[in-house]
Length: 241
Image (cartoon, rainbow, N blue to C red; front, top):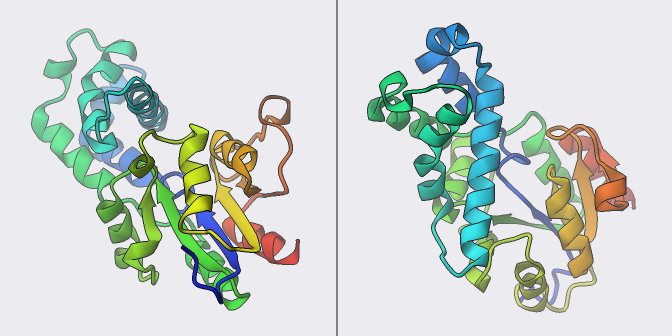
């Protein structure tokens, strides 16, 4: 439950929002770049597809009562992604050692430009900041530690703690009813429109940063309270709202 003196809160998605997937894209280039180039596969597109498919499989497993941690799903689908990219013998194209290298990169994702300033501006303006992730909370807290961003470990929460993964509405509603109970102003901020739109339907104000998806797709996801191109601009818009 929110402390009685903490009346304003911003809850952030982390992977893809506060931290970028770019480190994994770089690792694909470093480890498999020439082979991918010969196959006509762009590392960033392969990496994006890898994340997106893993998120789908993770979510579907959770929705069907077969919870599997995201990191395990992410690793498991890699060779399937190579197959769908046109690699006929994925396990000859890349080895388990290659996958270990890529998973190490995933464990070392780095903050987007302005992430530290974004969080500091919100705190200076009286907001309590939280992280709400589908990933491993310990790994996510490590992103903050390595980046020198102060984040209380108790403020890094896993969405699947509440029985089903986001974007099911239950995790957002449970967060409002538990950790954020009694708050006057609660925001959900993400670079995934599906995430923010679900949070809004659950009762949050929504802030979307276009840094990852570029196009908001209002006709699909509806309006937002705040839409900005960078994390710092988003923070300023939240405090000015």
